[in-house]
Length: 189
Image (cartoon, rainbow, N blue to C red):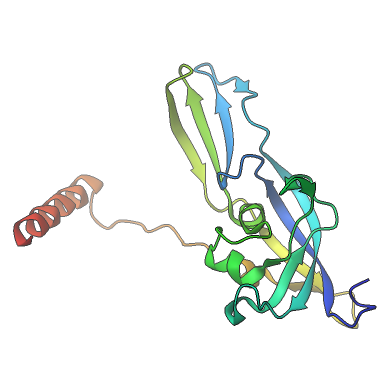
Protein backbone atom coordinates (compact mmCIF):
# COMPACT_ATOMS: atom_id res chain seq x y z
CA UNK A 1 0.00 0.00 0.00
CA UNK A 2 2.79 2.45 0.88
CA UNK A 3 4.52 1.85 -2.45
CA UNK A 4 1.22 2.61 -4.21
CA UNK A 5 1.29 5.97 -2.42
CA UNK A 6 4.82 6.62 -3.70
CA UNK A 7 6.55 5.97 -0.34
CA UNK A 8 9.74 3.92 -0.70
CA UNK A 9 9.19 0.63 1.14
CA UNK A 10 11.10 -2.63 1.47
CA UNK A 11 10.80 -5.93 3.34
CA UNK A 12 13.31 -6.65 6.12
CA UNK A 13 14.16 -10.06 7.60
CA UNK A 14 15.85 -10.29 11.01
CA UNK A 15 17.41 -13.64 11.90
CA UNK A 16 17.56 -14.62 15.59
CA UNK A 17 14.87 -12.09 16.34
CA UNK A 18 14.17 -11.42 20.02
CA UNK A 19 10.63 -11.16 21.31
CA UNK A 20 11.03 -9.12 24.49
CA UNK A 21 7.61 -9.45 26.12
CA UNK A 22 8.41 -7.40 29.24
CA UNK A 23 10.48 -4.68 27.47
CA UNK A 24 13.53 -4.99 29.73
CA UNK A 25 15.77 -5.22 26.62
CA UNK A 26 16.92 -8.74 27.45
CA UNK A 27 15.68 -12.25 26.78
CA UNK A 28 15.70 -13.91 30.16
CA UNK A 29 15.81 -17.63 30.85
CA UNK A 30 15.44 -18.94 34.40
CA UNK A 31 16.68 -22.28 35.67
CA UNK A 32 16.58 -23.90 39.09
CA UNK A 33 19.64 -25.22 40.93
CA UNK A 34 19.36 -28.56 39.13
CA UNK A 35 19.39 -26.88 35.70
CA UNK A 36 15.69 -27.39 34.96
CA UNK A 37 14.14 -24.55 32.92
CA UNK A 38 11.55 -22.54 34.84
CA UNK A 39 8.73 -20.93 32.87
CA UNK A 40 8.90 -17.49 34.50
CA UNK A 41 9.02 -15.33 31.40
CA UNK A 42 7.29 -15.09 28.03
CA UNK A 43 10.45 -13.82 26.30
CA UNK A 44 11.57 -15.85 23.29
CA UNK A 45 13.94 -15.90 20.33
CA UNK A 46 12.46 -16.56 16.91
CA UNK A 47 14.47 -18.05 14.04
CA UNK A 48 13.46 -14.99 12.03
CA UNK A 49 10.90 -12.21 11.89
CA UNK A 50 9.90 -10.03 8.96
CA UNK A 51 8.72 -6.41 8.90
CA UNK A 52 8.67 -3.48 6.49
CA UNK A 53 10.72 -0.33 6.32
CA UNK A 54 9.47 2.87 4.72
CA UNK A 55 11.33 6.12 4.08
CA UNK A 56 9.84 9.02 6.05
CA UNK A 57 10.76 12.52 7.10
CA UNK A 58 10.21 12.65 10.88
CA UNK A 59 9.03 16.15 11.78
CA UNK A 60 7.72 14.75 15.09
CA UNK A 61 11.16 13.45 16.16
CA UNK A 62 13.52 15.78 14.30
CA UNK A 63 15.58 15.41 11.14
CA UNK A 64 18.16 13.20 12.90
CA UNK A 65 15.56 10.41 12.74
CA UNK A 66 14.59 10.88 9.06
CA UNK A 67 15.09 7.87 6.80
CA UNK A 68 14.08 4.25 7.10
CA UNK A 69 11.30 3.54 9.61
CA UNK A 70 10.23 0.11 10.89
CA UNK A 71 6.58 -0.80 10.38
CA UNK A 72 5.41 -4.25 11.44
CA UNK A 73 2.18 -5.39 9.82
CA UNK A 74 2.12 -8.47 12.09
CA UNK A 75 2.76 -7.06 15.58
CA UNK A 76 2.65 -9.64 18.36
CA UNK A 77 2.17 -7.21 21.24
CA UNK A 78 -0.15 -4.35 22.00
CA UNK A 79 1.32 -0.86 21.90
CA UNK A 80 -0.73 1.86 23.56
CA UNK A 81 -3.65 -0.54 23.78
CA UNK A 82 -3.78 -1.78 20.17
CA UNK A 83 -1.79 -4.18 18.04
CA UNK A 84 0.61 -1.89 16.20
CA UNK A 85 4.35 -1.44 15.72
CA UNK A 86 6.04 1.63 14.34
CA UNK A 87 7.03 3.78 12.67
CA UNK A 88 10.25 3.28 14.65
CA UNK A 89 13.30 5.05 13.26
CA UNK A 90 16.16 2.69 12.37
CA UNK A 91 18.50 5.51 13.39
CA UNK A 92 16.92 5.58 16.86
CA UNK A 93 17.27 1.80 17.09
CA UNK A 94 20.94 1.91 16.11
CA UNK A 95 21.67 4.73 18.57
CA UNK A 96 19.78 3.00 21.39
CA UNK A 97 17.20 5.78 21.72
CA UNK A 98 14.67 3.49 23.38
CA UNK A 99 12.70 6.28 25.06
CA UNK A 100 11.04 7.39 21.82
CA UNK A 101 7.46 6.58 20.90
CA UNK A 102 6.42 4.14 18.21
CA UNK A 103 7.85 0.96 19.71
CA UNK A 104 11.56 1.79 19.52
CA UNK A 105 12.37 -0.33 22.61
CA UNK A 106 10.59 -3.36 21.19
CA UNK A 107 12.41 -3.14 17.84
CA UNK A 108 15.73 -2.38 19.58
CA UNK A 109 15.34 -5.57 21.61
CA UNK A 110 14.37 -7.55 18.48
CA UNK A 111 17.78 -6.81 16.96
CA UNK A 112 20.01 -6.17 19.98
CA UNK A 113 18.74 -7.80 23.20
CA UNK A 114 21.08 -9.76 25.43
CA UNK A 115 20.19 -13.39 26.13
CA UNK A 116 20.60 -13.84 29.88
CA UNK A 117 20.38 -17.05 31.90
CA UNK A 118 19.58 -16.81 35.60
CA UNK A 119 19.65 -19.37 38.42
CA UNK A 120 16.67 -18.79 40.64
CA UNK A 121 17.44 -19.82 44.21
CA UNK A 122 14.22 -18.44 45.71
CA UNK A 123 11.51 -15.89 44.89
CA UNK A 124 13.79 -13.14 46.16
CA UNK A 125 17.22 -14.42 45.09
CA UNK A 126 18.55 -15.01 41.61
CA UNK A 127 22.00 -14.93 40.03
CA UNK A 128 23.00 -14.20 36.46
CA UNK A 129 25.18 -17.06 35.26
CA UNK A 130 25.42 -16.42 31.53
CA UNK A 131 24.92 -13.57 29.09
CA UNK A 132 25.19 -13.73 25.30
CA UNK A 133 25.40 -10.27 23.77
CA UNK A 134 25.92 -11.48 20.19
CA UNK A 135 23.13 -13.97 19.51
CA UNK A 136 20.31 -11.59 18.57
CA UNK A 137 19.90 -9.68 15.31
CA UNK A 138 21.93 -11.61 12.77
CA UNK A 139 22.02 -10.99 9.03
CA UNK A 140 19.32 -8.32 8.97
CA UNK A 141 18.50 -8.38 5.28
CA UNK A 142 16.44 -7.05 2.42
CA UNK A 143 16.19 -8.01 -1.24
CA UNK A 144 18.37 -6.16 -3.74
CA UNK A 145 16.61 -4.00 -6.31
CA UNK A 146 16.26 -5.80 -9.65
CA UNK A 147 17.78 -9.12 -8.52
CA UNK A 148 17.12 -11.88 -6.02
CA UNK A 149 20.33 -11.10 -4.14
CA UNK A 150 20.36 -10.46 -0.41
CA UNK A 151 21.50 -7.06 0.89
CA UNK A 152 22.80 -7.02 4.47
CA UNK A 153 21.39 -3.96 6.29
CA UNK A 154 22.54 -4.98 9.80
CA UNK A 155 24.70 -1.85 10.01
CA UNK A 156 21.53 0.27 9.73
CA UNK A 157 20.27 -1.27 12.98
CA UNK A 158 23.32 -1.83 15.14
CA UNK A 159 26.99 -1.14 15.47
CA UNK A 160 29.43 -4.02 14.94
CA UNK A 161 29.63 -6.38 17.90
CA UNK A 162 32.60 -5.70 20.15
CA UNK A 163 35.18 -8.42 20.02
CA UNK A 164 36.44 -9.96 23.22
CA UNK A 165 39.74 -8.63 24.50
CA UNK A 166 42.37 -11.14 25.48
CA UNK A 167 44.54 -10.02 28.37
CA UNK A 168 48.30 -10.32 28.13
CA UNK A 169 48.52 -10.18 31.94
CA UNK A 170 46.76 -12.31 34.54
CA UNK A 171 43.34 -11.00 35.55
CA UNK A 172 44.41 -10.69 39.20
CA UNK A 173 47.21 -8.33 38.19
CA UNK A 174 44.79 -6.32 36.01
CA UNK A 175 42.39 -6.10 38.96
CA UNK A 176 45.20 -4.71 41.13
CA UNK A 177 45.92 -2.05 38.48
CA UNK A 178 42.26 -1.05 38.59
CA UNK A 179 42.42 -0.72 42.37
CA UNK A 180 45.56 1.46 42.07
CA UNK A 181 43.79 3.69 39.50
CA UNK A 182 40.83 3.99 41.85
CA UNK A 183 43.11 5.07 44.72
CA UNK A 184 44.68 7.74 42.49
CA UNK A 185 41.23 8.97 41.45
CA UNK A 186 39.99 9.19 45.06
CA UNK A 187 43.17 11.00 46.10
CA UNK A 188 42.82 13.49 43.23
CA UNK A 189 39.24 14.38 44.18
